[in-house]
Amino acid sequence: MSRFINNRLKDFKAYIPGEQPTDLEYIKLNTNESPYPPSPGVIKAINEGEINKLNLYPNPDAKKLIRKIAEFYDVSPNNVVVGNGSDELLAFAFFAFFEKGVCFPDITYGFYPVYAELYNVPYSLIPLRDDLSVGVSDYVGIGKNIVIANPNAPTGTTLEPFDIEEIVKSNPDHLVLVDEAYIDFGGVSAIPLTKKYDNLLVIHTYSKARSMAGARLAYGVANEALISDLKMMKYSFNPYNVNRLTQEAGFAALEEADYYRKNNNEIIKTREYTRECLLELGFEMTSSKANFLFAKFRGINGEDLYLKLKDKGILVRHWDKPRISDYVRISIGTREQMEKLVEAIKEILGGA
Ligand code: PMP
Image 1: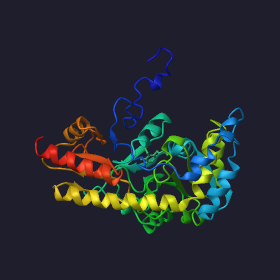
Image 2: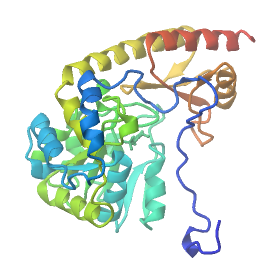
Image 3: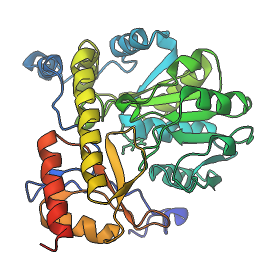
């Protein structure tokens, strides 16, 4: 730490992303990336012609991409903002809307408390139920701004749109931010509700279900006033937040929705296959509708399992945190990768 750091950042604890090792060919099941490449049109879109234009700034309004996203979800372009991954849009939202405070589950995406601390936003944690699901009634009429990841991370449990509507409707003077990073693996999006409620903001990412974690692209959908506030944030921070190549890639991906739908269905099938295998081995799991499983085994603690899998060349994610230190989160890869995972776990449980 330098001697120039702001006083209030001296003890600041930044977010720690999942490991991205470069030393070994790991089977990487630790950051919920898609095991599949982007669609052929995306690969074509990032062509020599586009690369040759990198001397020019991208369109700061990302007009073509935003029009396409709006068309895809049947909303107006004025209802859409794009960001450099959902992390950036979340950062904008925490700064723009939560001055008076916000609440979210005690176990959820680890970046929420980091943004709250960074921006001096007071926050309260609402404990998940004993089965690690989000208790809808805990949020109904709570009278606070709310952030919910749906499906939740790292637990994977998922609320239905009528649950979200209940929460949104009963807190009309507070903003409900629904982070739908994992919605395309079996959940139903709350985006249509943004037409009915002016206090709902839904954020989606291209990082998971659209195989583009490396491109950094996400979008927020909400009523026009909320979107214009987020655009003000963007224009006060980084007007060129989505680069030229990513804008083209994001557009092309939406022209090939079938490709992603097929992949996501495959991921869902592989998730259920993996769940069955782990159940047979005696694991307990939350009921995840995301591209990961959250699993624990009574005979081995989460950290040990994580370390032993790492020794065998398989990366999963473990948190040394209250309530969840027994668990590991396992991203769903290809069927072949998951077969290798199951074999490795069998060896570990067998003492090999
Ligand atoms: N929200 C949740 C719930 C996540 O798990 C993640 C992935 N780490 C993100 C947002 C961030 O995703 P992005 O790559 O779009 O920044």
